[in-house]
Amino acid sequence: MADIYNCQVGFWQRQFLLGLFKAVFSLRGRAGFTNLARFSLLHEQTFRRHFQRAFRWVWLNLTVFRLRRHPEEPVIGVFDCSFLPKSGTETWGLDQFFSSLAGQSKKELEVSILGIVATGSRRAFGIGATQTPPDLSTDQTGGYSRVDFYLEQIIDPCGELAGLVVSYWVTGGFCAKQKVFDTVTGLGGDLITRLRSDANLRQATASCTPARRKTSPAGRNNTTAKLTGRTKNPAVR
Image 1: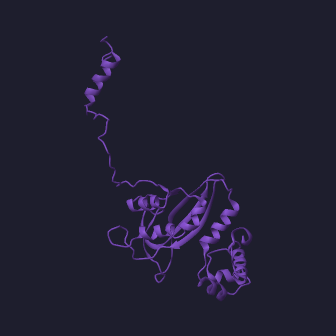
Image 2: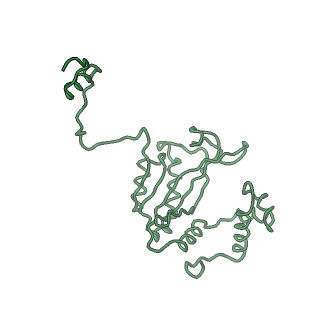
Image 3: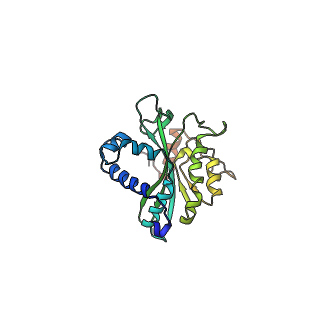
């Protein structure tokens, strides 16, 4: 990584990342600092101290992705939110978030995930995850909203994604908003999403499909009889 993409990571950071990755893939249960220390030679305070420092995780993940990807393989970008259940009342970030499993909003946690999919080999790589802050408006009329927060996750690594030529972005139905379409189009891409049930569909011209007349069951029977040449009475021919 250092030779090909100039991935400059300090000695102590390399040692910590090696211990972190070994512990994450071997532990059972939640990846908390206390549980990580049980499955690693590093102390719990070492994990807390390193996680308090900023690190370019998106840059590191994109470097790993470039090593695994074929140079001419087309890629697409994906971003969506994941609902995280959490017990307790003092955890930062608690708010009303939609749970697709429950089909309703619940007071838990949410994380916004950014990923890259290699369409040729059909491999998906997560490159960024950010916890959604609480007390953000769900509509676009109250200033800074959740949609603005989701879009920042795409805008910030835009320069690093330029070399991958990500032309298409895929997301869920919540982001089927005009602001999201304008932002993705401004970055030189196209948005693929699912329209919501209350989407405002506009047509440039009137529909060419003629309106169907509602007929009674008797009228439909008479029409069927005229088309087939038969009536309900088998004696009548």
